[in-house]
Image (cartoon, rainbow, N blue to C red; front, side, top):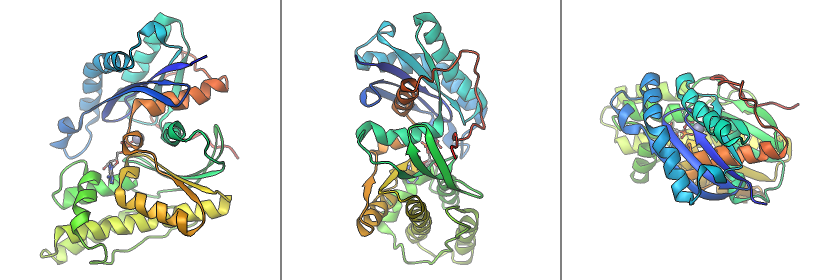
Length: 333
Ligand code: KG4
Ligand code: ZN
C-alpha cells in the first residue's frame, strides 16, 4: 500500500511543502523562496523570515496538494522540520503540520533538517550501498557524516568556524556579488582562473573543516590587490573550498570503508564541487551520488522522505514535542 506523506520545511528562508509517496516518488514539491525579502539585508533576518513563513504556509501547502492531485484526506502522515533552524520559522511549519495531523487524525513526524539533507539522495537511489560518506554542506551547517544504516550516523568531521555556504555568502558579499553568494560565485567562476591566486587550505584535525581563515585571506587579497579580476578571486576561492571539502570527504570514506560518496545541502548544488566529487569517486574506484540541485537546496520532499524512513522504524512524534533550534544529528556510536 502506498504511504503518502506531506513534508513541510520552514527552518530558514524557504517556505516549502511536498507530497512524497513511499519515501521516493515526489508527487509535488513547492518551494517559495524569501531570497528577495532578505537580499537587501545581505542575509536572513529571523523575524522577517517567521512573518513571511506565516503568510505563505497556507498557499504553499495548498499548492503542493493541488500539484499532487490529492486532498488532506488522502494523506497517511504529515511531517515538518523541527530543527535545527530559526525558532520562530520552525514553529510555523511545525504548527501547520500538527494542525493537519490533528484534524486528519494521522501521525505527525518531526524531522531533523540535517537528516533530511541526507535523505535527499535516497529518493533517487533507494539502492545506495551502505556505508555512505556524505558531505552535508549548507548555509548553516558543514558536516562530514558516515551513514551506517537508516537512523545510524556518525559525524566524523565538522566545521570549526563558518559553514561552507556561509563562507560563499560572506565572500560574495565582499566581492559585491549579492545574496545568496553561492550561486553567484559558482556562475562567475566559469570565466575566472581557479589557479590565479593560491588561497590557504586550512586542514584542521581528521575530517574537520575551517573556512574563517580563507575568508579573511580573500578580504586581505582584495584589499592588497584592488586590480585583481573578481572572477579570478571567485574561482580561486571556490577552488580552495572545494579542495578542502573533497579532501575531508576522502578522509571519512577511507576511515569508514565507504564505497559511495554522497552530497547534500545547498552547497551541493555547486558545479565545481560536483565535478570534483565525481572525479574523486572515479579516481578511488568508488561510486558518487549527487542529488539534483533542486533536492540539495531546502525543500519539503526531503522532509517527507526522511519521515517515511522514520515511520517505517515506528518513530512518529508526539504532538507535545516542540521545536529545537539547536537540534544535532542523532549520533550513534
Ligand atoms: O541547504 P540550504 O538551501 O539552506 C540551509 O540549510 O542553509 O543552503 C543554502 C546555502 C547558501 O549559503 C547558498 O549560498 C549555498 O547554499 N548555495 C551554493 C550554491 N547554491 C546554493 N553554494 C555554492 N554554489 C552553489 N551553486
Ligand atoms: Zn538546509
